[in-house]
Image 1 (spheres, one colour):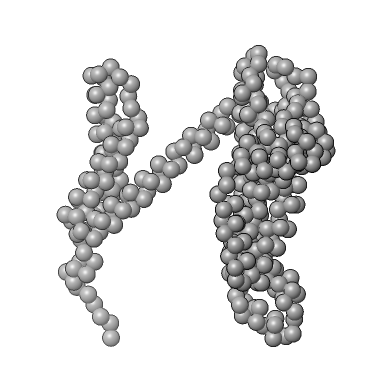
Image 2 (cartoon, rainbow, N blue to C red):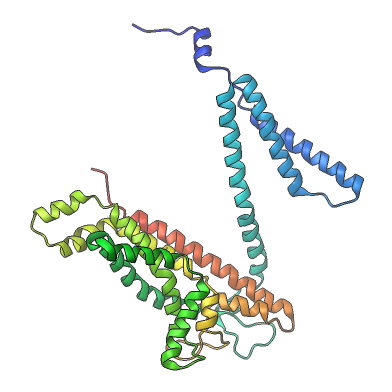
Length: 358
């Protein structure tokens, strides 16, 4: 038997609602009024028009007006929901402003030297215009690769110990030390690596491998934390099923636990690489800077992209715009590399994710 609901009953159950166009009309009207008000103030006082002030005033006026309208028509609960939604949306937009501004600034200034010469030449014997960052790209690649080779085995084995074997005081001490390492400043990691190698090779040592060790100090806690969380997400039923078949624990970890969590582990590793590839202070202390190509991590100074940006900006010559253009181009390249690493991490997470479909 079908049950019919009268229009009056349906309206009572659903409650009164503002038209869908009301929030947008209110937003446009609030911004228009705020812009008009600030425009009149600017004309009267002779000061520059404040775009940020007008926008913030308009948004605040929108929150106040839409909350009052919603409380009058829809009730207190719906008004609070609209208010919180507006606050969260405004916070998101406010957080996006510096990111969008940074992207526009770097792209607009970096494209001037994003040419073939920039990617195929170094700064050797270049004192003015021209030159490139090939030596910095090679240095960044070698140093980051060496840091990854050092960090990933140590971090992964540490996380395996904490999840599969670690019990008692030792595990708590390791966890505490990992948490401390996560928050240390990058300059401290650079000083540690420099002091370590200075003990054996003497003061003033500058090599690519020293920079790799400094970056590995920053990478290891990130790898440990991300891998530990992924290993803990593996269901215990999988481990118990493997043990029930008589498989040793080490083989269970190797054949069951790691393949199940490989997507998350790989994502954490890629994000840790993106975390350290833009570090400047530790590499400035440990690897130094040079204008020539260097393919040997264990000999002489080695340039990197972050240090290249710093040196081009800090040591401007004649003409100054040539140094600034190279600095902006290197900064743009560095941002693109970090974006590519994050995208690659997402693709890896999707490719290696466990198939849940039947």
